[in-house]
Length: 466
Ligand code: URP
Ligand code: ZN
Ligand code: ZN
Picture 1 (cartoon, protein in one colour):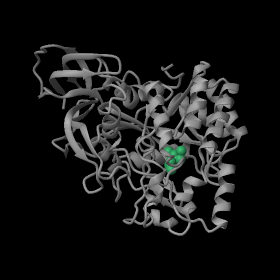
Picture 2: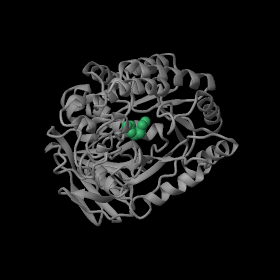
Picture 3: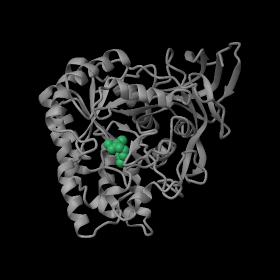
Picture 4: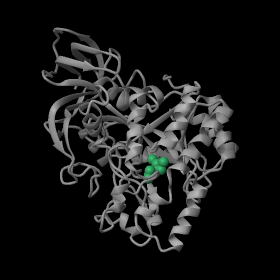
């Protein structure tokens, strides 16, 4: 659609509220004023709804090989689900293969998205091996390929884990090439030992996944990563923060003025360790790393979001079927073989509105900041994405604050047979979802076609966020 006029808008950006109409031409916002008169292809009356910037989920794993299987959503089903939930942009992780440079992985992920993408997307690169070629590839990805963000794992020995020397080398390089290091911070060596001890005692049920990955293992690794980044003079982004011990280290670094950032995910805010104790192997649905924690950690994480100790809410969407297909059953007799990960790309905005805004923890502006504006600023998509402003992409969600949804695998669009938030009723959700001026979802119906989503080339450079 070439032109669209949204009338009677109440625009909620991170920093302002504007009552105005929004004129969109060729995918971009061209005017924001009251009473716009224009000849357009379509007019959409948004009376009674809020206009929010489209959600940006900076942590997803679509079509990702893991533990002998692959995550259940690909770039079509995952994008459709994202769109139904009000997310119009995401950043996914491509993974360096054994013995490879970074280019083959990047090409594989471009291939995975090609012809399927419905929303706009970009990539980070997971680096598992380092040499001169990989360092040169990091420069090229950051400088030319639009992929200036690199994830490292301090956990999963034998699969993803890298040592401190490699991490430090990458941080030094990121300082030079304007890249941002993202860290999965858990002490993989200590965890591996705890896992072996538990299995030797016959402790095989899903709850031992959590009991062998204690909060201190996350806190220690988070602190180590922060100190290494400080030593290297590089900014650092800690992914999926779950516990007080990690948050505390991030907060202390930020108080000292260090460029350290943290994200958490809805599951760490509204689910807890108790979910692992569900009968009939149901705890496996919640097996992810780091694991869900005791409830008091969530209170601290909410405070982190309220007081800016944490800046982003993403999903870590990485779904595996429980019974159909039986991917989680791979660990029926050994929790360490349960594929790590869970779904959430469709639910993030609704869960955060319900438990963040409706519950009075923060206002709609902070909601926008956490789910769209800060992700855009940190990952160099701003101001193209993350705001409703003249010149920005017209990624806009008409948000119905009265819409009630009961989250359920029976009705969701994610390609997985369970929902982390099954039975949770939320008030507030998207009624129309627009990406670059094109309606993706309206009246709970998908209006967009596979292949319309665009790859987002992001520049390198320091995150535009304090
Ligand atoms: O359990 C998780 N989080 N799976 C996805 C991979 C990761 O660590 O982010
Ligand atoms: Zn991770
Ligand atoms: Zn992840």
